[in-house]
Amino acid sequence: MFSLQKIGRVLSIFQHFNSSSITRQEIIRTVIRKEFQSPLLQPTRYYAKGKDRGTKDKIKKPIKIDMNQEQLNSIVDTSKIKMQMEKKLAIMKDEFVRNLSLRSSTGAIETLKVNADGKEYELQEIGQIIRKNPKTIVINLLGFPQLIPEVLKTINTSGMNLNPQQDGTTLYIPVPKITKEHRENLSKNAKALFIKCRDGVKDIQNNHIRKIKAQKDISIDLNRQIQNQIIAIADEFITDAEKLLHTKQNELFASKD
Image 1 (cartoon, rainbow, N blue to C red):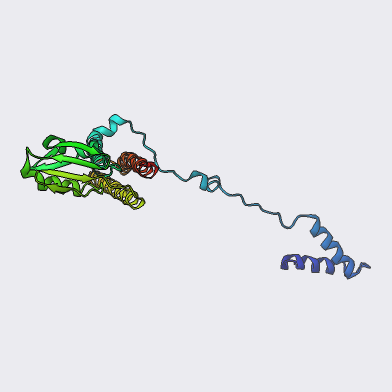
Image 2: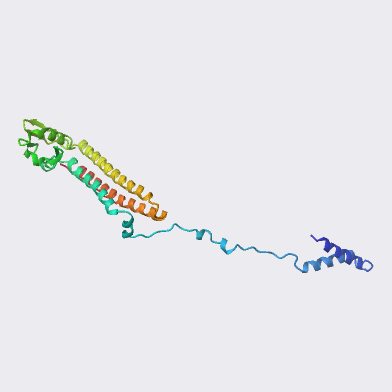
C-alpha cells in the first residue's frame, strides 16, 4: 500500500503530464517502478541478549563442603556416637549366642546367664553341668539350691526349646529333637533381635541429629553435611547387624543336627 504522500506525488506527476501524450496508466506504472527500486522495508532481526542465553546451564548447584574427620570431630564427637552404637550391636551379638543356639549342647547351656542378687553369673559358675547321654543333660545345683528357681527361669526362657525336670537339687534336661518349626521360631527371634538393635541405633542417630539441628553457630550446608555423616555412621552399624542376622538365619536352616 502507498502512503498519502506517495499518492500525492502520483497526482502531481499526472497533472504535469496531463497535456502530453503520455497516458495515465503509463505515468502510474513509472511511479510504481521507481518506488520499488528503493527498498521500502528492511528486515529486522532480533537477537537474544547474551545474559538470556544458556540460563539453564548457569543455575547454581548446591554448595558441596568437603570436611575431613578432624573438622567433623571438632563439631560432633563421632567416637562417642560410634561407641554408643557399638553397644547396641554387642547386645545383639550376645543375645544371638545366648538365645539362638540350635543345639542344646552343654557348651551353650554353660554360658546361660543367671540373675542372682542383682548380678549375673554364668550357669557353669553355680552348677555342675554334664551330658549324661546324647539325649540328656544333667545340672547339679547342690552348692546353690536357693538359685534353682532362677536357673529354671533362665533355661525356660533361653529360646533353646528346653524343658528341664527337677529332682531335688538336680535338673534333668531332655535334649529335644530339632524340628523345622523350632528353626523357624529361632529365625523369627533373630529377626526381632535385629529390629531391636536397628531401632536402638536409629534412636542414637536421631538424638544426635536433633542436637546438631539446634546449633545455630554453623551454616545450613555444614549442618546438613554433619547430619549426613551421622546417618552414614548409623548405616554402617545397621549393615553389620543385618549381616549378622543373615549369617545366623543361614546357620539355623543349614545345620542338620
